[in-house]
Image 1 (cartoon, rainbow, N blue to C red):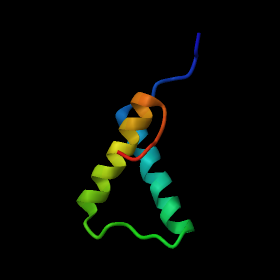
Image 2: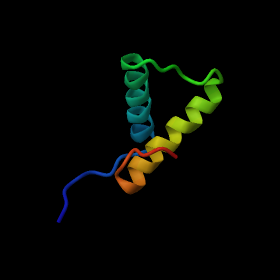
Image 3: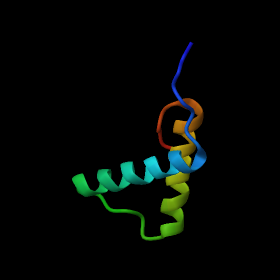
Image 4: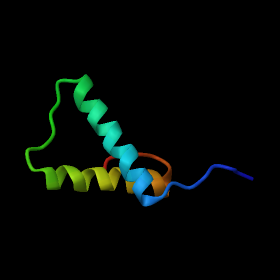
Amino acid sequence: MSTKRQLTEEEAHERAVRFSERYVQRGPYEFFPEPEVVDEVQKGLGENERIDGYRYCP
């Protein structure tokens, strides 16, 4: 029996935001110029982690 706690939508989104911000800081990358698009991708990453356990690209 797994005792791993399920992430809430908000927690998963926050984790995806932190992950993507670190990813951009460490590499030669930058965010897409439209913040709404970036937010939707981050929400998708968080949702994938919450549901499937992996933060793969939406």
